[in-house]
Length: 460
Image 1: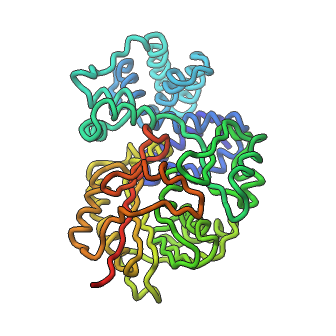
Image 2 (image 1 turned 90 degrees about the vertical axis):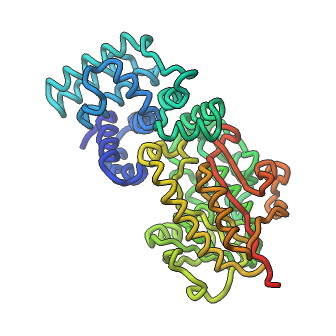
Image 3 (image 1 turned 60 degrees about the vertical axis):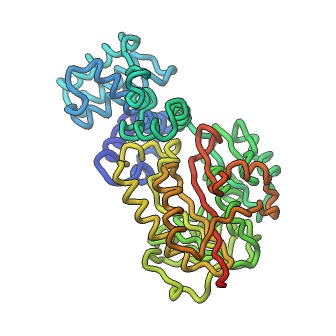
């Protein structure tokens, strides 16, 4: 069993790079390896993995200044080992240069041989002595390139964001994306109130704060034990969920005794919140194409003490009203998307996504939105949501839908549902004149989400 956190981080990063899986899936596959590490080494291992993925482009820019071998021609294992070492040298002040270099050279010698170790030793010692000589692209002449290198974003995406948001906004957005987000969760109001839960966490967490927009959110840092070991977690008193995701369920505003469809439920974060808002009274059908996710959702529902959720494995694009016995009061479509709004939590996504993905997923989103719309009763509500800030996945999907579906309109008359003590002026401040809910990491310190609330018209 490997006991070196740096070598485990290397194995995980290389496995991720060579696969089509998300980082979450790769970490799950290596969970046993990580579990045997002492707490301090676990923290280091995670810091190296996420740090390298957050800052990969910046690290490669530095590496290219000190390596005679172009980055693209370095063996993938050696390349990630160099990135891990450079991340320690550039971003981890508590680790002495000599320690970062020596441990990296030892791993290289063990895994790749003396010649590779010599190459790594030369590059790292050169870098350690000459960091200050590395010159970034000129922000006046090469704005997109500067954003790409300074904030470690793929060049195609930095060009896109520079054009969409402007240089200053793009820089602020990228800067925030590279920060480590607080842990945020949603109080399970079926069992406890937010204030009491927050007070109970004071002995095992730091920087506890009640969220401003989400009415039942709590954020904190530095838990002294894993979250799954919190007694409050075992008792089902909360569910981990970003503030933006919590706002989406409030935007849906479900009521007790309604019939609700969660059309792409996944692991059920929003499903559980919907049940809370309904006071566990009524009916929720959670649909997903992946039966394994639905099984996890069922287990999570039991932990939370929710019994109004029924799961149904279905492909939404092939679903019709024949799959159900009734139309729904409200439908939530949390559509598959690029995930470019949640790069703070999933930095791996920016290196696996491309421009083609945006168009491909937008086409899929349009089909899923139309299928979902067919399940809404007249007068009912359909909320479309993606964790992306790209217009092709946002406004353009809705506008194309409304061009074809004259039986729907944007619900601009939405008023915050007061059952859960919402703060209307704060929620409404996130809603544009067009009626779209938008959140951004830089402006709101939460994930980037887009949502549209649509109402089906009564037949004339």
